[in-house]
Amino acid sequence: GGEAALSDAAPPPADAARGRAPELLAREVSRRRVLCLHGFRASGEMLSLSLGPLTRALGGTYDFTFVDAPTAASGPAEPGVPEGLLGYEWWGDPGGEYDTAWRPAYEHGFDVAMARLAALAAGGRGGSGEGGEGGGSGE
Image (tube, rainbow, N blue to C red; front, top):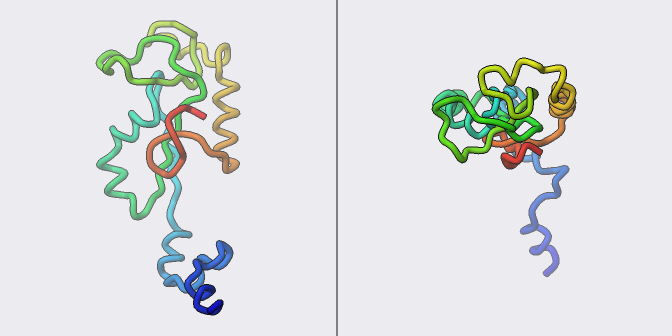
């Protein structure tokens, strides 16, 4: 009757760690977290793909989180990046040329980028790629 149904039920979330091997729990607690920030007019997904061999090699020791900058790219990406890939800017001169538009940091977007990073440091979510941080929308 009712006893069989209770014993087959999944443990409540608060008890989820009970019965797990202590070495597994220690390994989960000791994993280092790495926040990976892409370059100008790139994305967390692009960086994740570029660093794929490294993240796979170190994935048992580190948790990698790839995030997108808070502002969609307002101009061309780095030469050689295929058109159609969504890119983001941490800051920069809207619509400026790739080689120079990132320079005026304090005029366009630096405060928004710093607020985004502060939220991530405080445990906020948002980003793309590995580490379980959600989609690549930048939010």
